Length: 292
Image (cartoon, rainbow, N blue to C red; front, top):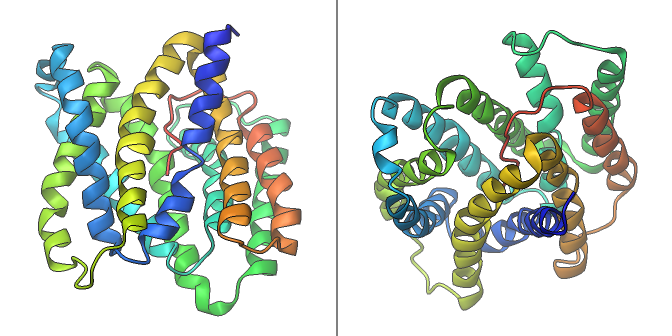
């Protein structure tokens, strides 16, 4: 891998490890839906000029139906569910749960006939990963957090299905154009939701700062870096960010938010990462977006 490839990989791994921290801060002020609106609106404001400059907007003609489907699954449902879950669980827990996306993608790809190989290594990886999730949930959470777990399961499913939609239905138009259009679609969808759930109290500076980081850095700039990374090192090596960002998220949760180092975290963390690596080791890589 070239020095530029390593720089892009490490940068994106860090950037996509940040959202869990800033979501946790932002949902103390903003509703889950108003936070999604602000995030997609800011990202659209950055990405649309780039797409127009590259003259890629016209490539979406004939693909809008699937762009809307992708926008709802990859961003609307997943980000709303994640924001809602982080009102109840720690950012570390959420990040580690989302780290199962590669394994979930492998399962979905197999079920949809996109990958015929289900080797012993991958089966072991799936088993190890789900054991890690079971230990994380069983050791760390109480019954009061079951709905938050369900929301995280929905997020994982949506994050896993999103790249499959890209691969099957949106492979022709440039990916950056698809992402920008998806941000615009969600900006329209979430405008009334944000209006009716807007905070009634004064919004603190730290909440606005978190929103700016989520929308501009973790969404718009992150996707630009992601596609540059894929072009530089290919989709297979690009998926290595999946194993960097949960580490960053867990460390930030512990250091910045003083989240506890629990037994479930200690045992589940390495098992989930190992399981995800084994489960996708021999799989054909999808250009997934393992962002938060």
